[in-house]
Image (cartoon, rainbow, N blue to C red):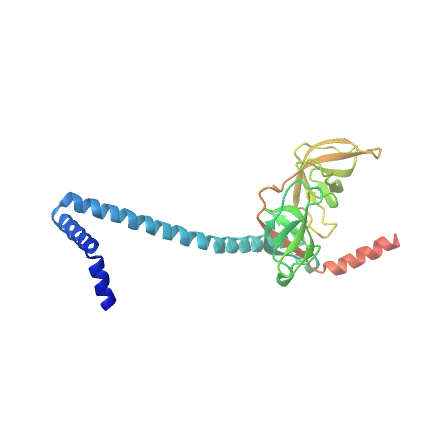
Length: 271
């Protein structure tokens, strides 16, 4: 208490000025209509802006949770769509059942010949090497390695990637690859020269590699040129995935893939 008294005595002049200013402002607001209106208008603006900021911040904090919820919902719908595509005669084949898991790209660049992307989740969530990765319903890449919480993904635009694609109009299939130069063009090789090429035709996955299910859009035909092997042409394909905009993705896992791969390896060994 003694310190407070000493402080008041020492700063008595300043405290008196502040008190008079407050008293005068109160009287002015009480008896002067325009001043009172201006005061309430100003304080109302400030309070309203503070509420808007608070609401915006709350919305921002909820935005991430909402994105995760929507990503999970998209994954569920994608899985149901793949199940319907795999249905034959009204019955589902459990060996070709594809499971969809939502995820997100953490970091990734476009243009590097051997650039690998970092995504999440990882092994703790069930992600395994060899799982295909989708973006917006299009083929994006394949999981190469996993840690506890993250996955390393090889995108379609990787010179070591070997994919399988078929022409939608004719059904002719070949190997889909990227030469490491133009990020807008991939090459579908092994297409016989007599096959009619339709510009704008969609290139779909074949399902042969057990990375993507059959019938998944991969690219669009934009032309062709003579291949090194006679009687064949290489088809220029524009990828449908926009690698510069990738954020939320889905991981794909096919049922009984290990058993299918073992049989495929045995068949290749016999040949």
